[in-house]
Image 1 (spheres, protein in one colour):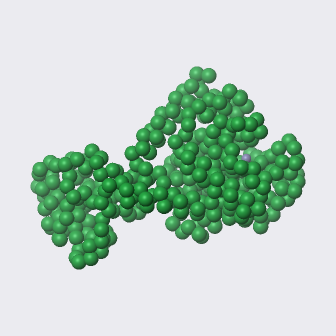
Image 2: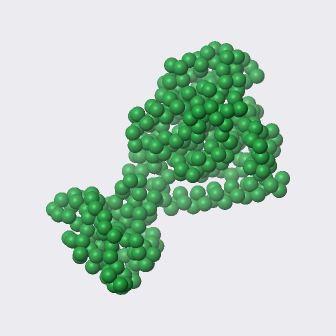
Length: 373
Ligand SMILES: [Zn+2]
């Protein structure tokens, strides 16, 4: 029990950190440029087994197909797989792949199984406390994968996938990613119904270890039931696997579309001046920092600075100050900023002079600190 408490304290810390980051930088968390497709199970973990099928084979086929379609339809989207072959990947390693890569969306793909042969249809889970025993059983079945890991007790701080009590603990903290996970799960269920033609069992909640450990919005998709002979046949067909992959891809595209819209709205409302195109001539500004997240104009980082402008490039917000019509003059402004100490040296030391043409950054040269030499 002590171990579990430590585990949850660590989690609370992570979640608090997340939440703090979010209130500051709304824009960043709407961006969707990188997704992780997690094919459930693999290697000596077959997952659910039907009469003619193993879950691990179907999830891999769907994940690979979905990745292919997404890359084709959204060339700018980076797609990361937790596995691309029949190998065993620990649940915490799956989460770590997503966390390390700072993915924007995590999709875990699975097939369902029920003691009743009659159950059928697709359901999408987001992290949360189960409302029915049925949902708890799904989480238990999926989390049982950790029992196949050598040192799972150590690795998951004593979490017992069979203990009902541990599931309540697992969901004690509301995740900051909940709202977006819910949004995506609804799009996914709509697509599973319309594009894949599967019965819609709805969005549900339960405690999945893999979702619990990931820090970005995420869902766990149960594509259908291998325990239902009809649905097993459906899931085994390559053309249907492709349909499900398409449903996933469509949901990702729609999700990106809606999040991009929110991002645009936020960009125009955060109070900073976005760099306007200046067509007449080249201009030069001093870039002192680039950030993954946008800072509001009143952030203490800009205290004492005048004429701060930013531009957005390669997924980062680049902050500049000053304006000159030549590199030399811009470098003069840079030296002046060092002299009058209006800007902290830590921001200035790696500054670059950026040449803009028609409002676009076309060249960057390291700013020269002649005064120091
Ligand atoms: Zn599974």
